[in-house]
Image 1 (tube, rainbow, N blue to C red):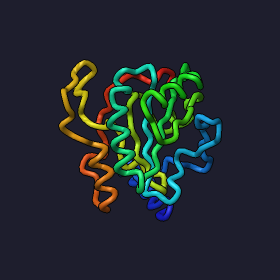
Image 2 (tube, rainbow, N blue to C red):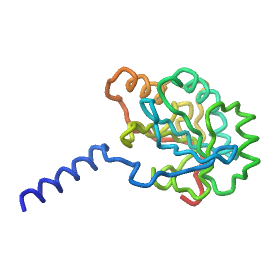
Image 3 (cartoon, rainbow, N blue to C red):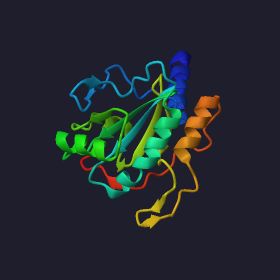
Image 4 (tube, helix red, strand yellow):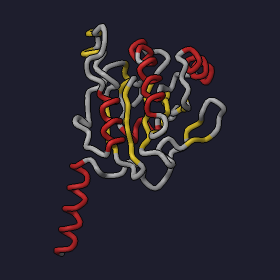
Length: 190
């Protein structure tokens, strides 16, 4: 009885502290632009995966393309980057065209059945998740504070949330703010 209570308490602490794994037993396989299967939760030999939920139909999401490029160039050696299209209306042609127009150099994946979006609770484009090799969400939210609200855009961001999170992970330090509010377009159907 006492062991069961302690085990239950341990699971409750893990769930509350955010250290529970999101990977689970079954890998989620999404397809890239060439229709190759990719597991976006597999960090491989990297510190973590960085998942950008994006949409070609969201002007807010498209505004962040240069910031995503900067981050992938700066942190590409230590992290695996993926852009995820979870909007069910995005065609394969639109994904490819969008990747080319936005100059996305990391893999662009199709989540048409919204398996990954639902597993993580992604609801906005752009929204980013940083997940370590054990499947723990280390950071979730906005890329930076360029948008303070749906119609409140600054000239330049003043807080670089994702960059700060990746720097902290690289340095082995805790992330100061592990969750922020993403601002953008709703992922329909999630």
